[in-house]
Length: 249
Image 1 (cartoon, helix red, strand yellow):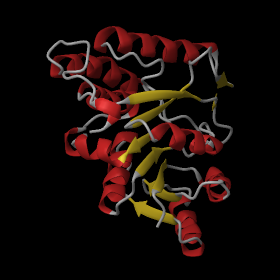
Image 2: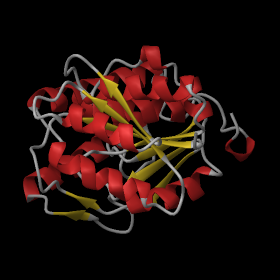
Image 3: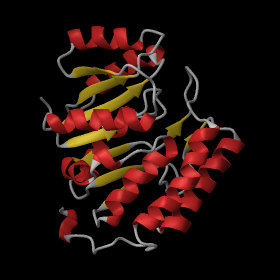
Image 4: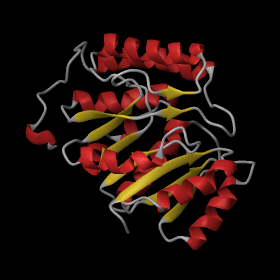
């Protein structure tokens, strides 16, 4: 078993799954892949089982219903923790996140508890988004920073690497949100505990196959969640305690 697990939630990602698995298997650093499939009607789960039968580093977690990105990641994180992985990634199954960036994340994670891939460090790094979607994302990032005080440039991003100790401290059973709000809640929970969170630059590319899972419900959930996080932190816009020396938990 490798030290690194890449968790890939899927729902109707059959066209993307094989090439994504091939990219992960070809990385210069060894990683395992966990496909968390929400009973995709297009046969994504069946294809994942076929790949797992051929490659010992590919695993599949089948879920019986589609109840949100956050729930899929939580299931994957629990699976990873129960099997002793040290570095656990979030990675979209549609190639919007470049798998070739994983070695960069792992290098940054040597001195961090959570590494965030940012689309907004040193300019905008997004390909193939309409202006309306870009403005929504930028406004969401600003909204989160103003209300919570988190200094991250891209708090809603979904390309992440967690150290094991961070997920263990995150009390996954207390996470209930999805979509944008799931990404914000996970980061805020660790940041307010004083864990070391760093950002690395990535290029985000809008999917070429399939359809975006964005919805009005996801957006409204995120608008409410940031206020809940502020009150959980007792109206502080800073971590509740000083960061531990060297990013250690």
